[in-house]
Image (cartoon, rainbow, N blue to C red; front, side):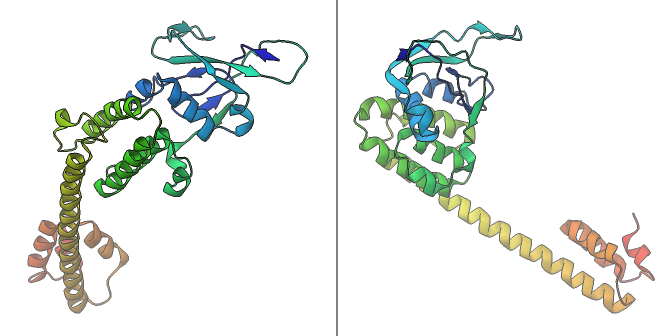
Length: 271
């Protein structure tokens, strides 16, 4: 039998036995826009909910409702994306299920690239971009993947438009040095975006090498000073290593100068 039962998900992190998608607390309000489109709600349920939940749903009956309502605790909610869907039950009569908000957690950060690769949907591509964090190199790979997914999507133009808006918001939040006003289509502007991301990757690698060289130089200074301290004062107590590890280059230089005339460790490290 078919009933207008509630079949639900939470874009932030849970899939409930009700039909509310709550994005009000998500760090990126772009998810609210994504889940305002029925195809992304369907991708969330089919790709990330247990099959015994999603297989009950007739996605052709998805209906978007006003997100302005009062919770059971009398809290006013005005930013939720609320969907209802008809569910096919094996039973003898129609009935309406009132949800108790049990949920199935969807934590996008726990999905590996390999696991997301098994779900060839635009939403899985979005999760991959999110999981790339602030690594431009990982983001570059994630963008290449989502472009390939969009190209094979039967509703390519619509999906490209929706995901492009989302990714522009995401890149802006990351502070990407990219002319976002020129990015109108992930598919059509792929080369422009790829070139910009490649420049960011090169910058990221250069900064990493510079940071590594500075860190190596710092460790060298600290090691040299420790050797000089041990040569002058003998075996060093553990607190000396702690101070050396936490010190700046400037502080190491001050201690090195004091070492020349100091008669004890306390004189070297006095505040």
